[in-house]
Length: 170
Image 1 (cartoon, rainbow, N blue to C red):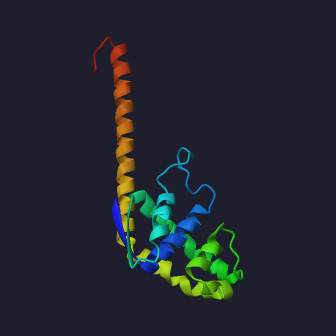
Image 2: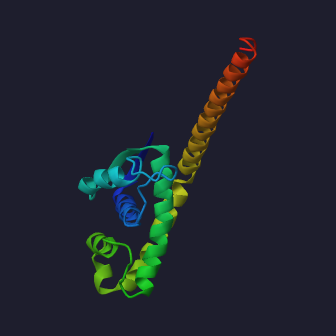
Image 3: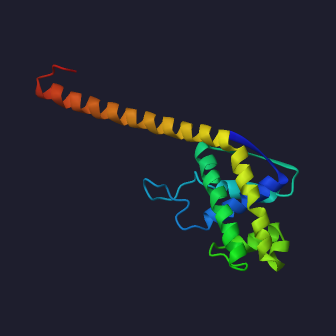
């Protein structure tokens, strides 16, 4: 787990990124099984909401959640641009309402969303080291799981071959 210490303005941006992420269909589905899982950003979203406005917000996230936050920060950057260009419209459910709640001036002047674009980019850049570590941890866990599956397959095959040979080759 990684402890994120977010300043108030960073917490707002991460919260907006979670709204963006959760507004996308299938965002909380496991990419392998296509089943809903609890490893996504819903828990981060729920944990941040009551703590918005605090000077510093600390949340623990898994490596998977950290990589999802990184992706959501990139997505919210694009959505802020789209919102400004489209005159205050967003295709992502609850995005515009949340943006207006966090940054009230954007309701009257959608172009101000362009001024916010740099914040998620800079936050993601500051988190780059932790994001790289999280990706490495995910890749190591995947490699370990694959090695375990290979060992189980080899053991299974060796057991069958041994049984066919009359018990030899265990």
